[in-house]
Length: 327
Ligand SMILES: NC(=O)c1ccc[n+]([C@@H]2O[C@H](COP(=O)([O-])OP(=O)(O)OC[C@H]3O[C@@H](n4cnc5c(N)ncnc54)[C@H](OP(=O)(O)O)[C@@H]3O)[C@@H](O)[C@H]2O)c1
Image (cartoon, rainbow, N blue to C red; front, side, top):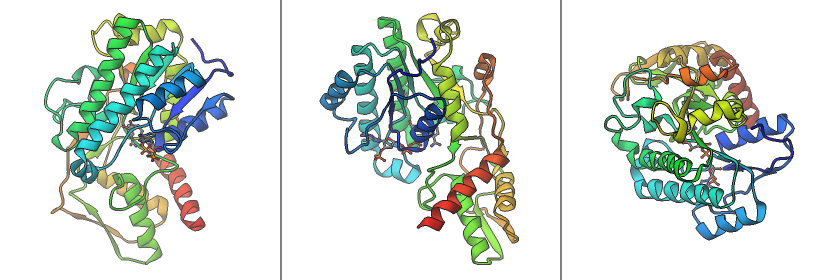
């Protein structure tokens, strides 16, 4: 089932890192009927409002990229909001999609659904095999409940809901706030500011040894649209009812390669043109030693990323430079 260029496509969370990349990708492929609402226009935790929206707009395809997201600090400080808002958003949308006969829905999750000590690389089958990382457990459990809803609706109602799990993302519209940004945008900003100020060193938290995987947001969007457009014979086997491995409808969306934080720092240093040194602050925590996704299922369907980490960082830095020069 390929989406028709006139299909009514709802991108929930279209102003976010993920949602905005999805909108750009869909526009570049000439999809002309994109449905979007800002948070102020439609609060997705409001069940009645979501029902009204679906009833009026009748989307045929849904990309569910709206969520309450944040770093360790936010997850620790507002755990009640993280579990409540995310459960509400996804429950409202998934149920409204079913009631309005949406043809396909993609529910965006994240790699934090996998156990803290999952074997590496993490495969879809590692879901629910051991304990989660405690700091973002409320968020992860909400996402797991969303996956279970997709599984259950597919089983009971024959819906076509799939849950791609992207690895760490970066790209246009990313958050560069040093207090709550992810490592990659935070390092871009640190190196940029160090170059501007002629600082002799940039200090990176931890030992530099942990390994992380990164996917450029435009590639992520391309992968999601690829999945949404999969022909029936390839899409159906990913769904609960048909899935040979008995797994919920989860698919990893990543590059299957990782770099150390030290290597990441070196790439960003080169890209920014910083001439000083990098030092590591060993007193700061490293976090999980490795978080790498097994992407063999995705690759077997015929999709791989096109933007290398080096190119992606160049593009992200160009966008960051443009953004700060405007402000
Ligand atoms: N960023 C990553 O590295 C990454 C990696 C893997 C997976 N993901 C997944 O991708 C999804 C989107 O993440 P993101 O990074 O794009 O987050 P984001 O940039 O914060 O975007 C989330 C969007 O959802 C909207 N939203 C939140 N609560 C809402 C509500 N109650 N009603 C209406 N809209 C609401 C936000 O609007 P406001 O800002 O106006 O509230 C925002 O536009 C999440 O499920 C996340 O787990 C992200």
